[in-house]
Figure 1 (cartoon, one colour):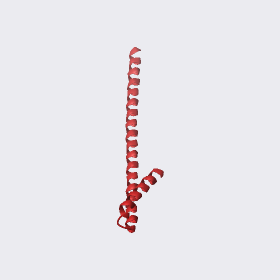
Figure 2 (cartoon, one colour; figure 1 turned 180 degrees about the horizontal axis):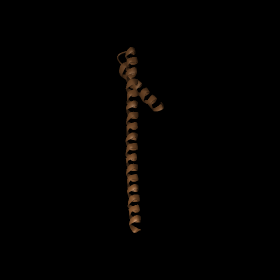
Figure 3 (tube, rainbow, N blue to C red; figure 1 turned 45 degrees about the horizontal axis):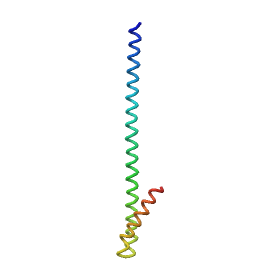
Figure 4 (cartoon, rainbow, N blue to C red; figure 1 turned 90 degrees about the vertical axis):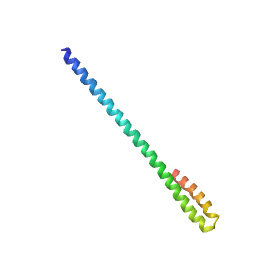
Length: 86
């Protein structure tokens, strides 16, 4: 009878260890997905800032030679603000 209980104990320990291993794997996967989402958000924000800078530079260039850099700075600021809002 004691052999049956020992075997049951070992089986339960094995299942518990497997469950902990599965949980650790799920946590690693969730952390990787979270990191990927953060990276995607940063990339998207930089794209919006760059697009705003480009639009601002084009609009500023129409004003004159001084307007290009100023328009680019203003457009980048607006792009950053828009990416924070939306």
